[in-house]
Length: 351
Length: 263
Ligand SMILES: Nc1ncnc2c1ncn2[C@@H]1O[C@H](COP(=O)(O)OP(=O)(O)O)[C@@H](O)[C@H]1O
Ligand SMILES: [Mg+2]
Image (cartoon, rainbow over all chains, first blue to last red; front, top):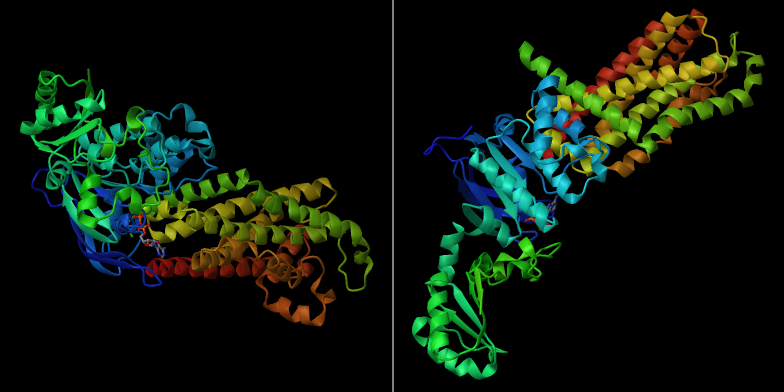
């Protein structure tokens, strides 16, 4: 199913506009391209227009003007051909609570032209794939959020789509479920499926996406690989936490030669920050220099510039601040995978 | 359309019909009105007014219950049709319909699938009513074949009512509106001679009853079950049911096309 390199884009949008009744321009002149085989992360706060774009690309909504091609077929003029190529898991998992997982998969199989026996087998395989074999005969109404999402994903995969659309697939999920879904998305992509994924989570886009487009108020404000976007913002920062405030002055002079020292902020007495393109590679020299100057260090952390910083740089607002922040994992507590990428230490050394 | 495509769409219609029926039986608030309510009404009317058989103008029937059952069956068809609309509206409201719309199937099949479920429901439901009434002493002089024919006419009628309800659901997408339509059932029911012969209806109602396709359905089923051609014309009943079903199915597929143009 994987497409040869150099094949036409999996998704293209040209001057896409969608105006809702009441004059809301949810999508306001969007151009984008997603290469075949890519994971494209469509990142933006609540209300930015992500769902509207997904609904247009999956033929569920007509653009007010402009057009989009999926697999080279127009979503406006050739909806049926597009529907054959795509799988979609909508933001509100469109699942009937009174049906069982297995029943839904069988129905979805029929919708995609599978015969009853094929649909049953495919359903069984997919239940195994997403770890719902046990729950397959239970009604979906009793599933947890994570189980619903996994079932929704399985449903989207029944016909082995070329292009998979996932609208906020992990919103509201616990870290374990989120990680499981990420693994699945990566595996699908490795098998050649192009993935168009929307998210409010910076971490998710950084973790999964080959390329990220940031959308705000219906417009694409910036686009590129997570690395390239972060490079626009500036070099990583090394945070040094000192054992006591007395060492602060000595620490600053010790580190002067290793990069650009950030001005000491509030509580700067025991914190020193250094910006350096060396990133992680600077950890050893930093510790050595501090040691040589007899500075007692509590911890050293490298903080990579995050997509949040990119968003801030291009829109002047933080992603979290711009969204209603429902169920966002970016609460800052360092628990397993819930560590928000925006503030997560890339490497931590303590002494 | 090639044979392969037709077969494929038929599978889709059957799968959706099956799903509609499965869910119907799991949703108590749809099951109560479709299976229990008509029987309760039958019990009340037949016990309270069985003396009506002695009224002048009342046809000579073996039992009042047998005369009444067609009314119950037709009431069931109206309810089955209405619940089709309700289920469709809730599919739209809760996003399940989007799943169907995102699939590469003929848009018409999505409506037909829903109505296929209604057809199945009405077959089960009217057979159930006939059997319960039988257990309570109703007799069907028309015989088993006639009973099967009656069930068939009832099922087609249910599709006809379902088509209207589905069209309303697709036009408005409003679950609340459809739920508020239940009282209309009684208008349809009492302007058809569901529980009394046409001759005993008030003149205004009698004029209405001529226009109400359910009149011919009720009378046709009544004639079949009682084995008495004087009570109605089964062929006319079948014709009315089929015309209704064809027209309202067209209406609802039209409503879907229009909905898709609007979105
Ligand atoms: N059906 C609708 N009718 C009117 N406005 C809508 C509708 N759906 C979304 N909107 C508005 O369009 C904008 C974009 O919404 P949406 O695409 O859902 O954003 P996101 O998915 O990024 O949260 C929001 O301002 C939202 O209120
Ligand atoms: Mg959304």
